[in-house]
Length: 146
Image (cartoon, rainbow, N blue to C red; front, top):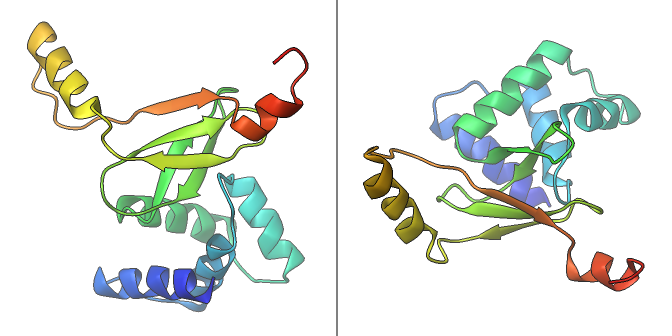
């Protein structure tokens, strides 16, 4: 996980951002997240670890990291949003609506579908984000009637 923390810190520096102690601490917390996490969960982890990270710093850092492509904000089925650590290249997510496990998927033919939607609607689609929700294989095995 140290590699993930350092990659976040390195990306901040490469983007010309100040690498402050609170940002470094948040990079460490984020690097230990498995799957989606909310800002509230990250704030709670900071308190548990006795890290002095202000609320405004936390929110600005999350948005900054999302802007750099190191995190992606995903909208959850319950209308909440969370963040997931991910690779900076374009991709989509499949998220388990029970356990929260998120899996990155590459194009898988979605670019063709988006291009078709553009043709049919007359839009020039500049960007898109697709999030799919369902039950992962593990949760399906333990779900009644599945």
